[in-house]
Image (cartoon, rainbow, N blue to C red; front, side, top):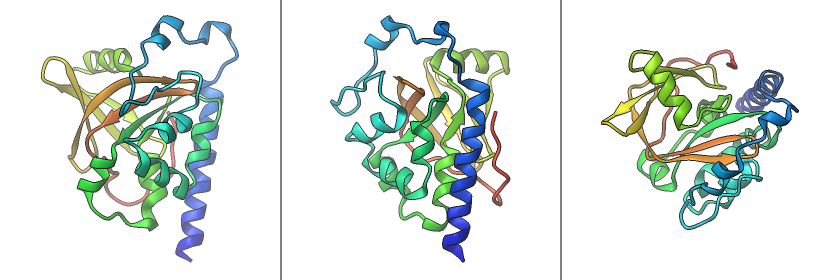
Length: 200
């Protein structure tokens, strides 16, 4: 029964993320990323992050994200990150997963979809939203919950989850064919009971 419920949730996440495609995907040539920005893509763990790869391909290539890549695949969420939409993922490192301790497999799909925000939010977009929001930018996740971005000192953005846990963005703006990866130093998790999956 639990396995069926988990599979149903993962399918719901994939459908919700897929539904976001209509809102954020476009064939407009003006939407092609800036090539100068692409040349500046940061490396992760010494590995090049290629802007023509999808989010899942770059996460799988990162030596710092083996646990995240496995969790995304095990949860059934990985397929959504290979589509043609635009997504932002706050990607905890292997060290962040180790510090968080054992995680329940029954809530894996929910936790993985909480890391994903439909839409493309690079650091400049986050800074603008924080400024316009009076210090807080609220981001609706694919899981249906809220992440809050705010400043942590003069130059760093911190991401707060619904449990009050904070994760600093350690590496910003890894540009992918279908969105943005921000590397975070702690695992962020949804709070409260499971919700209906939502998209921005």
